[in-house]
Length: 202
Image (tube, rainbow, N blue to C red; front, side, top):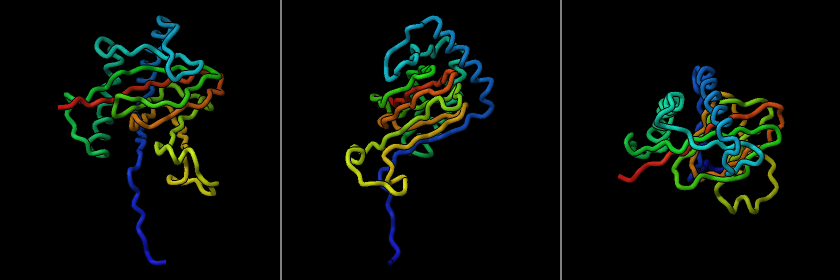
């Protein structure tokens, strides 16, 4: 067969970073989250089934949250400038809101996306083994509705892809990308932080 080209058009990336020296940061974040959980026991009802969804974090007055924002800013900047190629103006890039989800045993998150943002992200504060992988769904809807039997799962054949993260991992992805979280089958809580990134029009 004559040589041919494969043009991979309109790919959907998930950027997977590992935060260095995350343990101290995660301890501080976990303390902040659990304090919120005691104060707001009911939480919010969003995509969470059985888990606790926090109120939005205090981005102005809490030192731990401000420390977290400073750390993640460089990763967001890298994604926007080096990977996607959008114009970056630090005054226009907004990280908000930020929230946490604590999934106890038996909890999970249903399929959803984050409208009214350009990017979304998840950071892993506590991730016990078997506590629920994150699942991403191909945004080409027709592909999910009808497809032939798959012999080899590749980036072109798979309709759903799972990622098993580690504590200290940061995933950044387009906000339109539908995702879900599997059931926590462990005896320990799974604690994550999520946030959205928007860019104001100039």
